[in-house]
Image (tube, rainbow, N blue to C red):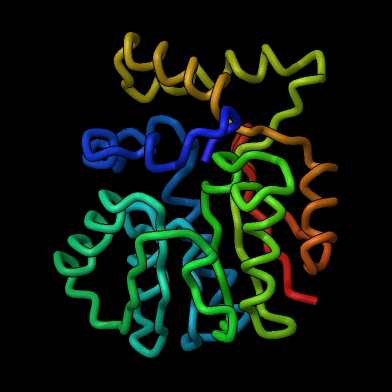
Length: 238
């Protein structure tokens, strides 16, 4: 979902879903390193097993990473975009991932609340969700994840952070644009993509993020990754 209240499925229709794997590496600095470090954080926190909730599973990058050498891990993965779910399913088949995976097209509300998970991911999702108290909002999603985690269970999440009210916002956005071009994005696509980022992404400050985590029943987040505007954290269910 986005800051102009359009559903997340509008951002990831079939055409965009198909090009996602190439595009995300142009947009997100250090995309593969983010997933590698997320894997290592979970290995440290809960070992090589556990039942995972994958919130906004996208094209299946988390499933690919977290199942690596860990056949005993099981997953519930959901995404509001059926095209992305189909991509994730295809990736699981192509990579011969044998872990038990329950795919669901939908939102956190489509995951039974009596299920309790050992860990969860929320990678590059939250900045697409509006910051309000509705069922479409960031707080609803975070509370929903918290309600479905066991006490002490880790949540690894990553998102773009930027405070629109700060003087450096414009220069930060310009540097982000230059990174996209450096990574080979077509200038026309970059111009359209950046306009979408500015108008549709619900970017928030780190202070606001910490408020949301506290309200949703999580411990203060520990940062383990940063590449320009992209940050990665680990937090735990209180």
